[in-house]
Length: 287
Image (tube, rainbow, N blue to C red; front, side, top):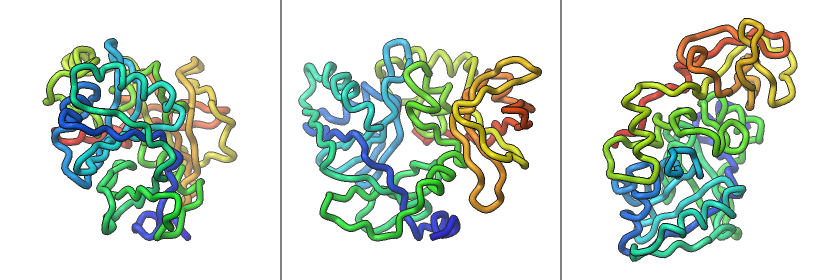
């Protein structure tokens, strides 16, 4: 199984295990719309959308995907958020006619980049067309499974941050470049919206996710790796890979705005790297 196979929809990526909840009830859409940065009301059956759950101060409490299952919404998140995100959502289920059920372990998530298979869910998890396959433990994966290093290369090359490594509760969604696909600026109110809207009106954040590239990486440094700019500490490289075909180095980091918005040269373990802002600044999902 090759890189080309993965990019042409002939292989799938193992994205499990994931924390998974089922939200049901007549008020499920209204409730979740008031808890996330995404316009959940715009979802249609068979579609999934990226979103963030934020605090009143706009900091991220969860990096989630929401799937429209017809009579319910499925919410999935990194497994390490299972103990905190469920109670966080349940705490606000007061007057809404909705029920949140933890169904972690009932299904495993596989993703196929580049195509849409029958009975799958349309989801751009790697900021490109693709589909999710939620399979029960006794179901067989219909495609070859990509090696973990290929899946990791796809994630980094597409500029998709990983919760707990590249981003976390210390970040605001715009710092993680979530406006590409996870923030709607036209929906109704949600917890943290005032902060996110203020950032949009200002026009920038002080630091931001950026991709880094180098033509001659040599051995990749242990992570996290300190980043220097003009001999001063600028941040840390948190994810890194070699391109499966070209051997070039690619990485992710959250850097100060001056480096994240303008192509700049930085140094990592004595090797020159360049920031690649356009690789992560894509249009956000239409609201």
